[in-house]
Length: 294
Image 1 (cartoon, rainbow, N blue to C red):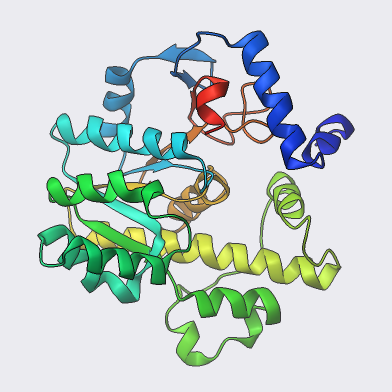
Image 2 (cartoon, rainbow, N blue to C red):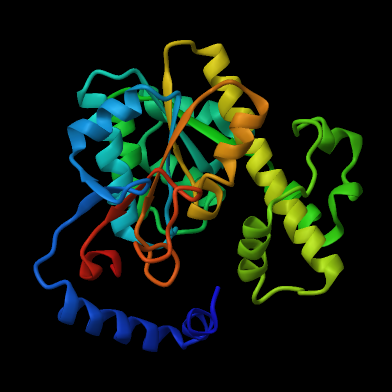
């Protein structure tokens, strides 16, 4: 990250929003959503993207958790694949493997919406409306929703005490061999993400280990589901910091022979056409700046 970009990250949130809105009015008036193939920066249409996704075992669609437009992009991908007759499952960071029975009851229609919303808020703190349309579409179309995450207690413990503090029982919930082995660019990403956290070498190590537990565990759980359900493809919904190619997709490649396509919705000040590379994602879904700020 250069000094100008670094300074922009540190602007107050309201000023970032103002600058983004101004830029939208100046540069992007009337522009619409489009999909960019990052390797050559060419624009592709949805039918071409669907053909590429058909060839992969997993499709990762990242998000900033609070960005409603990102969730719409995710739903667009799910709908396009489902309408093309692709056998689907939806893997979600927002739910853990230990609560899979509740997700199954929701999709099958055995759990009413009020009960499911209560379960949702136990699992995830962000507003239900952010994910409502995706989860209702899954239910209406009988698309399995798969919890990919591990216990939040484990993640918190690694973050505060380190990976070595986990008990044998906790380790049994995780794939073996989780280590903090990342390239320089991924390390830089983690350091940026740690901006408000402990920046000491020991603090960085624990944060990095927690990130690796997340990525490894979600990759492992996605792989196990596909092994048990041959013929299914999985759309993985997770934060862009997990979904980018160096995150869960890299661990999927390390742990299996499954292939993946990565789609990241544009996020100003983080993911945009000026800074993105093919090492980050296969496709960048670019929306109007006005849309992506909502």
